[in-house]
Amino acid sequence: MTDHPLSLTNQSSHRILHKLAYLLSARWVREGLQSIFLIYLARHSSSTYGEFMLALSVGQVILFVAEFGLDQHLVPELARGKGKEADVLMQFSMLKGILLILGIIGMIGFVHWQNYAPSLRVLVLIIGTGVGLEALGSSFFVACQIRGRQDTEAKLRAVGAGCGFGYGITSLLLGAAPVVTAFYKLIETVVNLAGSMLVVLKQSHITLRLPEFRQIYATGKGSFVFTLMAVATILYNNMNLFFLQRYAGAEGVAQYSATWQIVDGISCLASNLLLRNILFPLFVNLWETDRNELSRVARNSARWLIAAAIPIMFVLFIESDRLIPLIYGSGYGDAVWMQKYLVLTIGFSFIHNLAAYLMLTARRERILLGFYSAGLVFNLLLCVFAIPASPLMGTTLAILLTKGLVAVMTVSFGQWSLRLVPGRSMIHLGIGVAAGGLFYMLTTGYVYRELAEILAIIPTLVLAWRWWREFSRNRAVPQP
View (tube, rainbow, N blue to C red):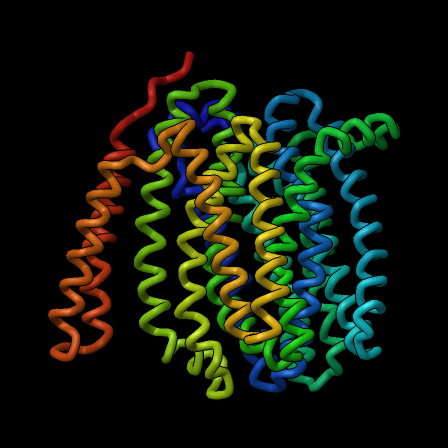
């Protein structure tokens, strides 16, 4: 099969599952190593674990400012700029480098403004810089995605994770100081950056050259709205954590982070792997070549994501009383009840991110920025008024209600413009969920708990499987 992205329109399912399998394999390697690292850290010292999670959150702010918005703009630019990949990559990389430097300067000012202890300041700077540097490597990973080479990306990410977390786990076992252990993130990022750059340059036979300042300025001007979206998104996703640190300290951050790592990690599987790395490049290519096929893929993706979210939310809700103590130990009781609320964010994130990427595909980024800005203001109000009175519940409600509001806005727009969520499919799904709930109520107390849970999700899983078979058989019209 050719690697040219436009050839993907000839596939019935566009090899979506094939590409996802590659990325999931690398994700499992990384998440497995990260879980070992963070769980060992949490059991060793909850305060140190809270400090690491705070540092990672600060780093995410830098990363999203320097990378996330620009990568959303980079995908259509690479798709439309055939023959000019080297110029496009270099312009975006240089712009990311400038934003990264500004982000690091802002991070230094932030840790001083918060008056953190000296050791925490150094920890935040090391981990935050390591997370932020991921922005530079992501440009070359996007080039792989446009060409449908998610297999190459997966191999590189697995190697980087092995090097970074291998160092981190070894440091913990040897009893190294937290500041020494913190370099794990820099190691992972540097390996990813070097590997992705070498592979893209070798496969594409292109030579990078420094762009002129006016080219960087033009790229930045065109990407400005995407950067603003990134800022709004990362702030409303992490602002509650900063308020929680102020009113509940590192222990409160640890309780919230214990469940948020699980819930947000699952949401990221959909938003980062399936949607951002596979479907969004596919959507952009189909927007240019076959919009009827784009509509078909989008509507099928919507019902798969909703069908996938329901069993996941159900299992995490029911099993929270066993899952949290099993992973983190007995000292995280508040995380158990918090997870019962936070599972709803998985459903919101799945369908919202699909609608958001479709809006970007249709070049409705300014409307999307308005939705994100409204979510940011709403989140800030919740943080100011809810968290001081009840830190843990206020933090939970702030992120839950904000994600719900943003999802309502983006999905409503998608429904109006594309009829994103098929009504008949949702009726079928509702029947499947009701049947599963009936199975659960009738069997609870009479069979093993795990069996009752399996019976509850079977109808939804069967329906999702039937939808996938229908999509795979419904072949697109070959393009000339």
